[in-house]
Amino acid sequence: QVHVVESGGGQVQAGESLRLSCVASGRPFSDLNMGWFRQAPGKEREFVATIHRTGGGIYYSDSVKGRFTISRDNPKNTVYLQMNSLKPEDTAVYYCNAAGQTVAEDYWGQGTQVTVSP
Image (cartoon, rainbow, N blue to C red; front, side, top):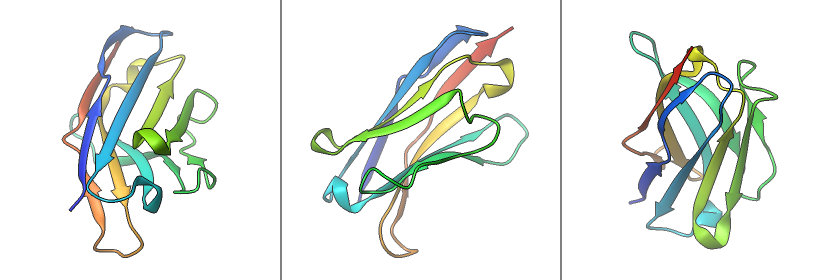
């Protein structure tokens, strides 16, 4: 079992920045592909960014490309999401996902709220 914990959410104004962190424990972090998703009120959860277990294979949704950066620090068992130039439409609960090599190895954190005021 993998335990996933996000932190770093908060309330900011449009144009400001936040950095989210996610720690995954319970198995070697370097075995896990990591990703960030978000869910706004009344909407489905959507993909934000992902990073391969090796640190390569980085992909972003079109809505955050150029503003958000995903990175990982394997010795610290941590993945980050640097969010710059935040917009009100980025307001959502942000979830961290840890994925192993099989479909069954799919783990989620409890989420962290990000609120961006106009």
